[in-house]
Length: 290
Image (cartoon, rainbow, N blue to C red; front, side):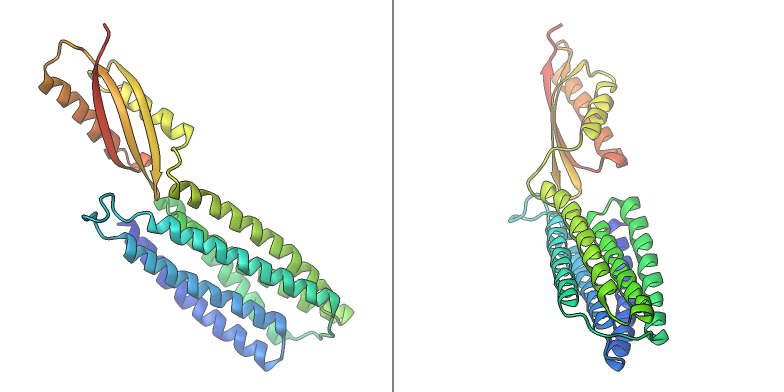
């Protein structure tokens, strides 16, 4: 199945789940006047926004290349991923601020089983969403799904903090424990935001493929019949794909047509290797010194 269709399918599922979770948590948070549960609802609401952002990115990156965009639109995906990481960072800062405020001005709280049940359901649902999205992110090598999966995980972590605070309130009747947990979670989310931001920036600035990918390309090309050596190999990331420029050496005794056939084999075999995710391979032929 096409990667874009998978991303669209997964995003629709997450939108439905997040819409339900946001509505339930916000309703109970307002009903029992609990700021932590309302904040958790807002966090789930931010997931709704990012899911719509992902769908928008899928549609914007799907058109084929045109006169104004000769290389296609795949860079929209890492751009959206970068934006998503900034949203995660903003969520982390917001949670940290809430935690600090709770420590400075702690408030009295009481045990409420309705709120605890709501948060537990949210925790289970968001953790399921994390593994659901991460499964497809790994299978289809989608950085934007991976980023959204970690956004879901950040929501489940914040739910853990809220749950700790709600349970602790039964013993100390204050939200200090909840505020400490929220601060810890905010640091974890901030780290996730940086981890997501790094590959997105690398894809946007045309960073070279990993050393492992480089060596695999060179190994495959060197093993193709007629290729005597790989003289030069350059790669650059383009979204979640790779552009390859490779120079191969063939026997100088071959005709132009024979040399072209070898170059075409290199081109076709490399682009057909799914694990490499090569968008385009440009092959230059040199006559060997021998």
